[in-house]
Image (cartoon, rainbow, N blue to C red; front, side, top):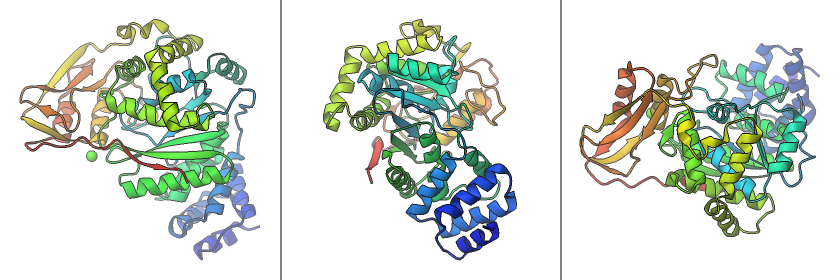
Length: 434
Ligand code: URA
Ligand code: CA
């Protein structure tokens, strides 16, 4: 087989065979096929798309390019959740404990944050002593014992995806639906999921800015999952404004704990219940979404979800007393209130720019090498649709230094206040099951 023939075939709009797809994925991973040929193929795919069959084959070729996590020793159906990334998205922490309390095993591998979006692993490290590395045996045992474990990316999973993503990043071929969908799904499948619930974000702070693009990505991923034997569904959720109130690592852990106590922000709670109901049904612990939602509400009301979260922290070496006393989480030295300059209704809180403001404080990474300050961040005091008076606090900045003029400027520039009443945006924009 020759790479040039594969490139020409895709350039001419033809369908590649499974053998051809495996050939270029393996050859590229091994270093036998050069960047320039794979770049040309990625561009041909960008313009000529891939059929459903090609997308499924590309996904599985990437899964087979490296190790796969074996979760077969964990009892029950392993349902994974994936979010395409947002600002202030604390969902995983609360959701995992809620679902685990309802009997669905959560064996989760999570990532770190980059740019304006945060990562679950960084948030967990805000808990003193918490470690995100477990051996495979410890990981399996912990999930069997307490139904929940969250670890950082480990092992040599989907090396083909790592190389292809880095290449796409510098060749103008990131924003291709078949390439994004296969990239995300390959990682979930290699991490051992039996079933997958996707939270595809849409809006200003999301990877996909329009509802149309978000739906297309969601549909593509759901099709791939179902075509390779993993039950998969997606919800589309709003990311035009940050999720919840807190943006920053320790601040978001506190928000997750509040949510497990039934005292969290309404939008975060709604998202946890929506995703959690789907996970419980896919995990075979309830027959209907209504029944699953009742189970989740009960696990919060009777404290079981909070109890699982405590045990999870303890099992991974963290200080479980933060659950009862969140002031034991890292605290920033200063709390600066940013006051509204107008009276009216919040009409816009641009998620991406507010995420960048939190990053400038040190809550996020500008580059992969940046170090972060786990204690700092922003706490919104209002959300879109809320009324506000002039002089009332809009945002509280948690910071360790007072050189924050740029952060304050960004907050004022990207929060809009209108005189007319504004409706809060709908959080769940769609559900895609096939
Ligand atoms: N996120 C991924 O994991 N892969 C892509 O291709 C794009 C976003
Ligand atoms: Ca913006």
